[in-house]
Length: 250
Image (cartoon, rainbow, N blue to C red):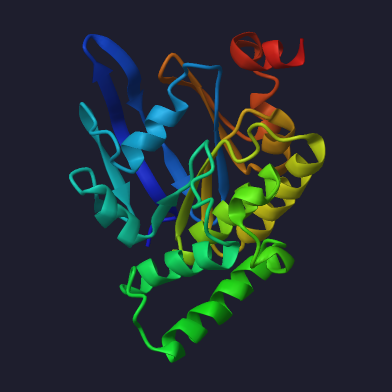
């Protein structure tokens, strides 16, 4: 099996004459945390939407574990183990964390919304749900209403529900967006923890988080790859400093 879990070839997306993503060639190494960074409008989230087929590429191909998935539907790609989170927390606010994670587990087991299933199955899911909540530090909040949780805990819950779907490749879209320093540090540590035995591709604006987590970084500018490499190398690139990091350090 290739060392690259995900590869794109000339991935491109045009919108009525505007090229949002231009000939992007990504190679995501298995077991790594790979960060996609760049200034606003660089095309980062559009790339995520193309990889998960929320958008259809204008041209180019996407391969996951050596299989061409360019023509597949979002649900089929998710079933392969490519699971994404979103910039805005995507959990059910009126349910408890336990119920949110249990719904994700039901979906993975193919018994989504079958609330009449036997107590034995539901108890099994409860046990797994609590293990996942424990893994993200939310066990003590299992039966609170999700909408009442602090923002950082909601993002931790979203990671738990993503883990419930047993991802081989996790796509995290701005996991620390809108957080204070304390929550950023907690989510950074959590992402590092859950990266064991899986691959993570993340869009992230916080360069401290990127420097802490990423094995490799791809920098986008105007929809195209500007450069790629480890943080120590990328952070010293004059074009990157001008296009993105310079403004971040001003």
